[in-house]
Length: 298
Image (cartoon, rainbow, N blue to C red; front, top):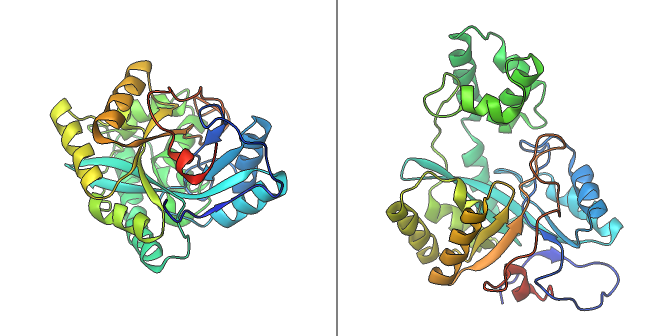
């Protein structure tokens, strides 16, 4: 069993079925590109009946201790987490790290390098928007930033909704912030092998986040998951807010083909913005093994 970093509830619980326990292992706070403080995200999860929770901010672990403290106060199980941005075959993919030691030097240094360059990228995004008649985007986006090192497309999207350019952030992304649109600027993130190395070196397990979102051909997807597995990856998100039923089915097939454990996470970013609240996804199918079962959760 992996030496996982987690905090168990202060009082013993009656054992439960790992397929029915309410687990959410993918959520964000305003330490990265979420809206709410870490404590507030934990409280929302608790109100929705979450029993085990992980905060997985992008390339940053600064909110983990705060979230863990609030989870402990509420009697929730808590798992240390992060979501690492990775460039693979020219595409941005995300790898969730669960059970990490947030003080591990190699992980901390790797995340710091991955965050580097976001400010310059953000200024280029603002310049692209200014070129199509939307000035002041950098300053506007900064109004929504909790951590200046992690300014992102989501912050620009919220400002563009505020000024009435679009009705919601999904429309903003489609019109302005994806490849081929004026506010899109690519960024070179971590390499897949090094991201998994940071996570494993910090005592955690690596999980492919929302695999249904990536614009891969079937051949590319197979190669990506094979490389992930070969590098030491252990899990794949089967259930998340952006997955359709077909996405979940394909993730189940991948889990079985590559002997990966299944994970579940809402990818919650904020009230009124995210498709699903923390803890509101359905149960995993019994054809896959929950990744948390190996940690005695269940």
